Image 1 (cartoon, rainbow, N blue to C red):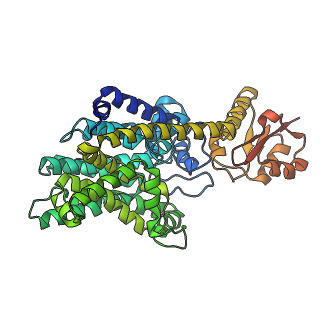
Image 2 (tube, rainbow, N blue to C red):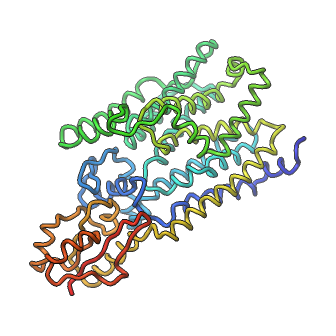
Image 3 (cartoon, rainbow, N blue to C red):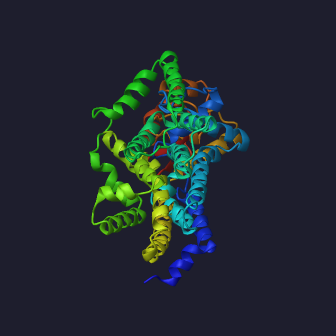
Length: 484
């Protein structure tokens, strides 16, 4: 029997705004305290830092001096943001946060046409209240911006299918712009998330004798690829390491098992069920109930499915299947399938009238579980001082500015240390010793074991007071040497 409270909860604007505001708060706070010591954040942040400091707008380097492996679009956005805000922390994290916010708004708005208003709260809750979205929403990475661009491209296809509209020149130009943006964020990986679903949809519609609307034509795809290839060829010609690092290691290496760590085909499925819970379980329950009502006739179920719903299913599962075929796997790489799954869930669950109490209960459980998970991670981060090196770098910068220090940093084991100190390169120990003894340096930042080794060679040097000794949560430490 339908519960009145479930109907009232799902239809209430207050419920929608509570879910949305909670989601935005989690997006902004889930990664506190902010630091760059994990998930390759420092490598991504260093690109925009080098753009501003050295003017390398097309091909950047990472902190260890080797060539960066990702295209520069997100770095451009961070560089422009820094020019406006003059804050590196904001400029590095704003692209992901803004992309998450836009995705949340798009999903809530897009879920309504053709469905009840209940679909908006379901889409918003599914996208925001899981274990992946809050984590990626303020990381210095490209996953969230890439997911936004891919979703916009797939959403345009969904609108064409839903409205039975033809592709016009203006629509193709928009599709070209979105595909180009995806190429300049992470390369041709956009093909893996969109083309399998387009192929499945076109095959299904032809079999049904209907005119398919998922295919925009060849030129947006080929033109966007040509821009990426121009960037790649330019790198091969102009940057000596580009072919080995970017083409052979980063791109071709993903399809082998010798360079990157290979994972089994089924790797993404259990992780997706876990990270997307409870919504993954709700989607599975809806699918099982639907199949059972059709006496487990899968072909009949797919044939009776509306074209727009079939596109969402093909888009999500097609991307998941192709990404599963690539040996090199990491959980965050499958994130672009989450937004279409949220839209699919919203469309299907809003029509699941006999079980609305389940949907309402899932939203409440997700609010409590995701919030608790984020609070525990934040508390753990502060308790273990995961931002110790961030604070250490800020202290050193402030002291150097007030005392007019000339200083260098040693130790290439932590990529974020250069950014904490706003430096472009790690110095070589031999040159640092020479400069120190010649009076050209006033302070040195370096790991404790290097300090023990170099102190006998540095005349008049001593370890600064304990306030300038820091270790992060992984126990990676740095100390400050200064003149006595």
